[in-house]
Amino acid sequence: MATDLSYKDAISTSIATTALNSLAAATYTDYLTEIDNTEAGGSCYQYGLVRVELGADLTCAAGAPYVGVWMFCAADGTNYPNPPTGTGAPPAQVQGWTIPANASAVFRRGDLLIPIPLPPLKLKFKLYHGLHGTTAWNATGNTATLYRWRDRIVTV
Image (cartoon, rainbow, N blue to C red; front, side):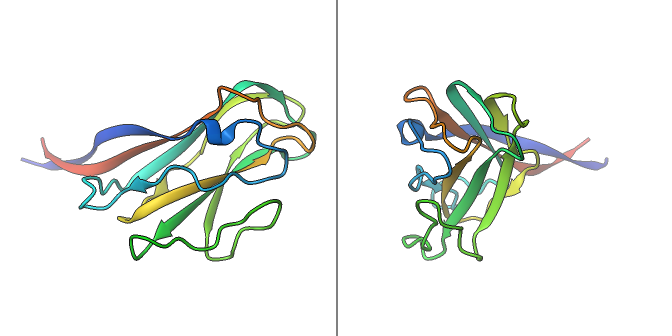
């Protein structure tokens, strides 16, 4: 018998709906829904991807449009670090990723291109609207979803 690595228990969790509505250009969301990725919370998923879907098409600006994704962890189970707000830059200790978009093209949905490691802690995300310099996101229908999964060893 041999062992092989596969993936198990892929789940999706909504981390934002109305929090994304009318998000102004070049600004951050507030903290999004908390994810309890601890053993006590019944999770401990190792990997994740974030998908952002807008309620209506948005024509991106020229240059390098993107949606910024930042993950914050509550190491003590309660307190989160100071997040970026308004148009300020994120703190250096905060890991960030981007969902790229095509310049001068329509954006409706996008995913992180690589899985992100999820620590066994309570997590919150923030998003940054870098798709267009002056146009806010639609007033309704915007969502962000965290897809999570973990490794498992199987005997083959």
